[in-house]
Image 1 (cartoon, one colour):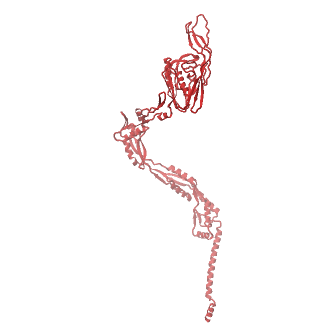
Image 2 (tube, one colour; image 1 turned 60 degrees about the vertical axis):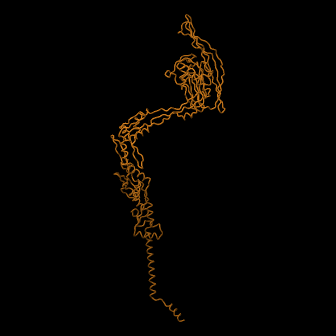
Image 3 (cartoon, helix red, strand yellow; image 1 turned 135 degrees about the vertical axis):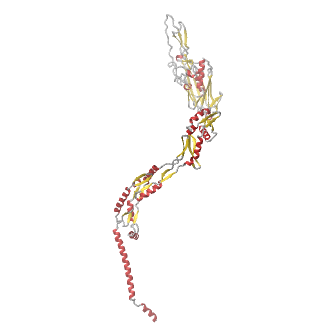
Length: 631
């Protein structure tokens, strides 16, 4: 009991004066610290107030001190600096040349507003404690911000490319040249080019720094693809080639290419060998063209075109025969190989096959196999001159090929009737039914024979005229006259869809025309109307003072008028039909008798009455009112 009481009594003992003094000191310390903090805060508050809306002291941009300046003042100061910096040109130098350019001309850009904003944000973009720390630090360590700038590549790159093009020097490959009969190595020079990537990097850094200066342009040496050492083998070969003449042979013939000609034609080409470009000595084809032209005729063998033959029933292709001609390229190569030899410099002429202009394959594609029609006119001798005219006209008219849709024009095909082309004077029908000797007289036998072959083949006739005089040895209503010189003509068109071959033969008395092609199944039938007779022949006499008195002679035999028609019906493979009518009209022509003068009498000369003809479906022109010579 006493013990406990004693303890309690001890706890109630009052604190000593020393204890009270310790508590008082701690309080003072705390109060001091608090006062200091308040003082610091007050200082920062006052400092913040002083720098409100201003860039904090100790901050600069690109070396321009902006501390204590407002945003407007800083912008003005920095803009002035940028203008001055961009006004100073940059110099680029290389190879003794200098290019001076202002930064703005090659794409330098400056963001003054952005730089000012960044300067102000140094002490504003954090929390209060962060910003206070940054402000405190600025009193001991200044901050220099970069000026926000850039480069416009659309202006910078063309500027660099222009300089690069001006400074570019192409390397010169080593080569070989012939001079004064000798061969020398030329070239092998280095070139240069601008290192555009390095120049762009250096210029961009300078432009961004807003500093002027001199920039050495970086250059790269470019090596030639071929250096002199690469051409030694070609040099040795070329010297061998011009060392002596070359002989060219073909059978028992030979030609010599002189050394001077070899030197004149020597050239060099290049090719890749083992990954390196290597020169090869060659001979110029153009320089040796004259020499090769002398050889060509001696080796040429003309090709033979494909043709057609027949036996009167069928036709077939006679194959083309290839020829031979000088192979210029092969011969040139043979000369080069011979020239590369130090001895035995002889070459064989190279030849190649010469293809015919009209090949076997082309001929077979025409499909000329079947006899479509054949016609022979009755033998008629006439004069020997007439026989000549018929023979040569048949030759001119024969061996003609018509493509589908092509027209045969008889007058154009046989050409003019002149003595230079072999024609002789023979009887032909002139105006009024009179017969006179004319060049080419009698050739209507050829046109009539061909017309009848075309008629029976069922081929389209585009123009046909009958004679003004009825001729009994021609098939009734199926004669075909020609006048020449744009007058009466015979024309037909190939409407078979395949090529056709017109082939005629004549001895001057008997004439035959065959037409070959591809049988398309058409069938032809025809009928003759018989003759309808018109005016009976009259008789007139005319005075001819060149005759002896009392004598007479028949000048024009004349004829009674008559007409007829021939109808042709063509039935095609598909069953369709076409009917055509060929009309013929032979006008009445008076018999004309010439009489000599009668002494002491007066003779009245009568003129023969005029006569006209009718027009058929094929457009027959008048025979008497507009007389034309009919052959």
